[in-house]
Length: 165
Ligand code: 4NP
Image (cartoon, rainbow, N blue to C red; front, top):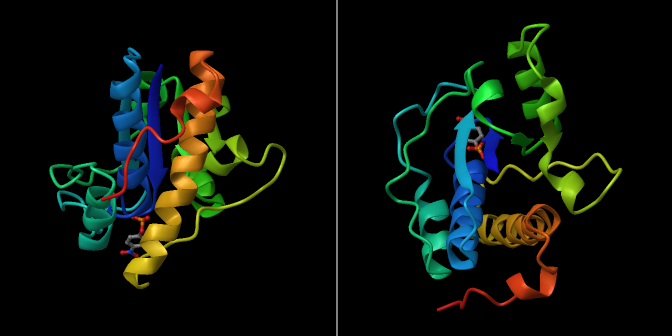
């Protein structure tokens, strides 16, 4: 599986989702590849937001080395699944796509947690650190669903894989 997490800036939601999923993938020994990108270019080349870095670090996940990049059309071919963190992000990806790009690879991330529902991961940018922690917990719950769905391993095998410090 090659999975791409996409948000707007690639400094808050998608780098946390990338770090969470990669960490759990490594712990499970799955041969998966995880990456993230943003649909906007404001923060290209920047590390994740300091609150995102600190929130992930509290869970033993180091995302400080990640750098924001923009979503590009080649991503449609390079990934099996492309998760949009929010409905506006989904719309941006669709607007960037050409008619022959496989939009069926793109899915709202929270559909994994709430099948059939149209829900967005709240944007924590401009919000206090507590908002990043809440977003982290939501991302982690959805990542456990993704892992169990596509690895065939039961969801409980991924619970409590991380310890909060
Ligand atoms: P993200 O959050 O999409 O989760 O990385 C944002 C980061 C920056 C901006 C918007 C959302 N911005 O407008 O600069």
